[in-house]
Length: 435
Image (cartoon, rainbow, N blue to C red; front, side, top):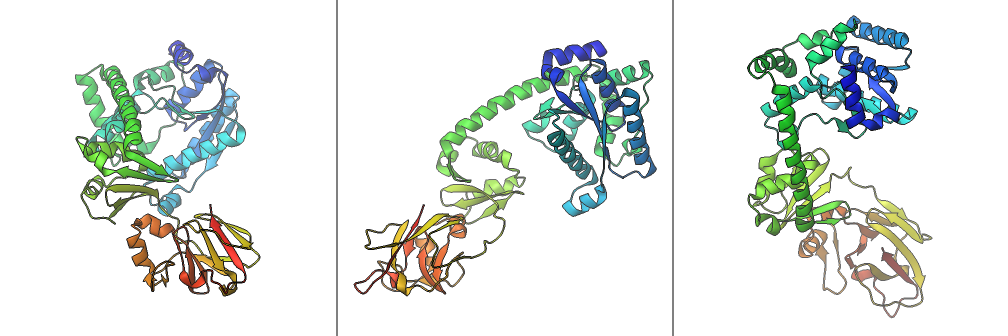
């Protein structure tokens, strides 16, 4: 296996030969074998062990073992302890997901701090087979069936082509010691049930299932690459990007068949899971929304608007009289006293400075806000103004009002208030411009 491993590294992962590498070492058979193989081909490696404090003395025994192994092989080792149960509670995660998140976060931080170029994990062909059936049982899409990637950014899995039987045979033939994780015997975990019950039966019926799965996943990865190209083409045709928002043209989308599949293709990178609700948005009323953990999808007339979830209502900004420029969430606003005024537009207004009470306030709009739009007769509620201007819900949330005390001076980027306009009696003119 050592020769096959070196051949695999040389042909498929040659960048590892001259890189500084960090091996995630649990103490189990797979990571112990990976460590010996890497040392055997003289890769530049160090070890990293996570103590999740989930199995009392057994966890401490794993840590002691990994330290002894590092000393025997004369390798540097890093140890990190976690309160995994507390982390899982704090982040509403399963213990397995919490441990995974803690592990990869720490490994990446360690690599960043100490200059390790790649992180090696000991996933192998049987792990890949188990993951395939786990994702299949959950109704996964194509991405879930393409397998554990051998390379995922800086995470590299050099044992993916090798079976559990090969790894165990190597360990036994070289008289290697390793630790057994008692939780791997618990049938309450789906992966263990698949490993202990399903996989042995499949291998009896289909002895070459691992190699055949590798071929199938090669085809699936080719199909995924084609779909990704189609997604990029569709993105160009149906999506308009404005700053950090994406506007999906439903007229373009509805010309495609099936439209729901194309919508899935566009939105799958954004973490949505409520696909039935998303599909109903297409024919739903304006204003309906669906959320993922970090994104919001809003129906707005003949389009869907995808935007990052706001981190809460923004605090007001106070603008003293001597201010010349202020940076805001909607742009940079300049304040300049001028001798004369020119034609206004949505981004530039001229006001009678003597009518203002400083400090001015830049704030979000609130229910009940109203103003006297310049060029119109009478008073108008901000909510009605936004509706007439056909602003989307997201545009409304992002809008800012420039106020003098409680009076609105400017719906920024839209319309000034008539009460502060320049007249023949004006002595001091203030130009306000956003860009």
